Length: 77
Image (cartoon, rainbow, N blue to C red; front, side, top):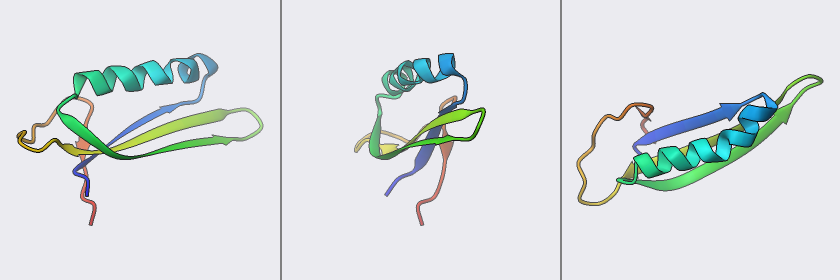
């Protein structure tokens, strides 16, 4: 079960190159969260190539839920 979702997405080459670092910065800033699942999707058309990373998370055992900038909550059921 998860309590929140964080989505990272990029279409420009430079943004795609930096996407991994964005994910890592967010993970370091939210070390109180446990990643329970993830998806990575690549899509493209004639002009654009989109890379999307979706992290599903929940609070680690023993930590209080807290709203954080750049996070949103979602129900898994």
